[in-house]
Amino acid sequence: PKAVKAAKAAKKKALRVITLKGAVNAAALKRAGLDLAKPCGLALHPAPQSGGAPVERVALAQGDLRVLAPVDGPEALAAVLGSLESLRLFDSKPLQRVLLEAGLEPLDGVLDLVVGGWLLNSTREPRDLGEAASALGLIVDLPAPQADLFSVGDDDLMKVAAAAEAVGAVLEPKLKAEKMLPLYRDLEGPLIPVLAGMERDGIKVDLGILTE
Image 1 (cartoon, rainbow, N blue to C red):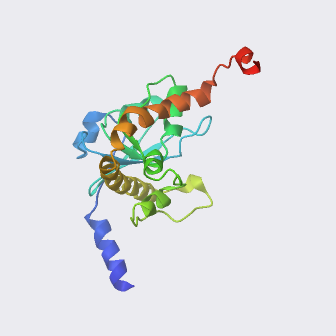
Image 2: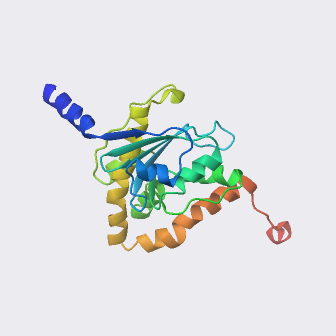
Image 3: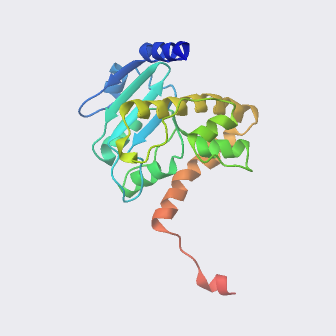
C-alpha cells in the first residue's frame, strides 16, 4: 500500500497543472502549453444540460498537461473548445445541444466516446466513462461516486479529462482498424448535433401520410 501511494504521489507530482483566469482564447491555451492540433480529453462542470446550470469550468488533458479554464456563458465555452481541433468527450450530445440553444455553431472534431464505443460493439452502449474504458481493456483513475454532483473539485475534473483522453487514444485506432473511422467522421459524428437539434426543436410529422 505504501508503494502504491508513493507511485500515485509521484505521478501526480509529474503532472503539469495550469489554471487559467479571465477570458480564455486560443492564445491563452497555447501559452499554457497545449498543442491545439492534438487531441485533448475534456471534462465539464457542471455537466451541460438543457435548462440546467451553465458550465463554469473546463478541464483539458493532453499528455502530462492539465489545463483548468473558467467559462462565463456558452459563448466563452464555445471560444475555448472551438480553439481545439480534436476533443475526446463522453457523451457530447448535451454539450452540442447547449451550444445550439445559445444560437452557436456545434463543435467539430469531437470524438464521442459513447458513439465510438457503440460502433465497436453495437450490442452494448457504454453507460459511463469507466465502462467505456473497461470495454477497451483500460483501467482509468476516475473520481469516486458523489452524492453531491455540485461539489466536484478540480482534481476530480482533471481525472475525468485524463480518462477521456486515454479512452480516446485507444478507441480511435480501434475504429480505424475496424474501418469504422470514416463511418464515424462522415455520418455518426456529424449526426450528433443534428439529433441534439431535433431533441430541442422537435420534428414535423405529416399526419396525413401517417394515417394512410
